[in-house]
Image 1 (cartoon, one colour):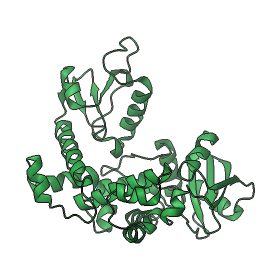
Image 2 (cartoon, helix red, strand yellow):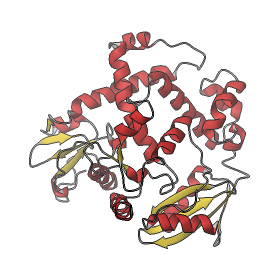
Image 3 (cartoon, rainbow, N blue to C red):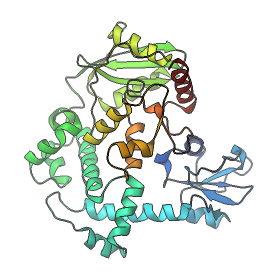
Image 4 (tube, rainbow, N blue to C red):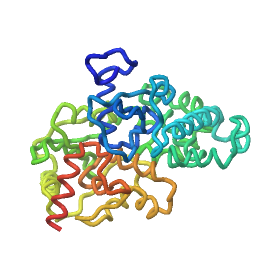
Length: 361
């Protein structure tokens, strides 16, 4: 379904999904690339969500899940962002990911063999992985295996069953490789954070409501929004069995410091963090904390600073999954052309934060 109320049956996109696609298009959200394309009725051209071209009026926008659907409706691919090439890369990575996922952790899978099965070259396959995921095929396979393992644990699977279902060779390997990435032992993660004590409070600010959650060790979440229930729900999602409670005096000093930074004031104290993250996420977040107030960096610049110039998309994902906004200033990362994009808490908040920091700096 598209945005034209008078033509509700032109394609299969439901209204709620179309609204989400429109927000992603306005924000040029990197995470949306490959999930859909948007077409412009006035020009008969379709583009990627991240296309740098000027955005159409909402009533002129139509969404399709594939380039083939867009072309069946009479649209031509944009010569600037080349969506048909991008979608072909997504399909290639998806097919390769299935082959990688079918192998156990101890099984040696040669990229040459996978490329041959898919009728492509190893170099082209490697480039597709870097472009679509920011990771090498081996890194992607490990990340996918870990995500599957976490999902099974959340659903209540026994650790041994989840371990072998995901292709891990032995219990020692999963404890050895995933403790730092889960932020706890697999047994604790399976319990949904059972035993963890997380206190939170929600305070008003000039940018809306601010939720600050923390353990005794440090700040675990800083969320911005208008709906308090949605903010609390997001906190509960990762730790469904943790002891999460509201506390009016929840680490008052940390809360006041965060509220001060929201208003653009410089940091007055160092805030400890207690967050779960992969090693790569931690490296990205540490790099973001080095960006001076009043300054910005592009996703490409952050990737280069990490020594991983081909991991731009992975950097973007790490920014998007940052749970401690403000403390880890992901709002200071912008597109290569300087435009704002991909802020979980809304581009208007991102713009205000940057403007305030620039003024006070």
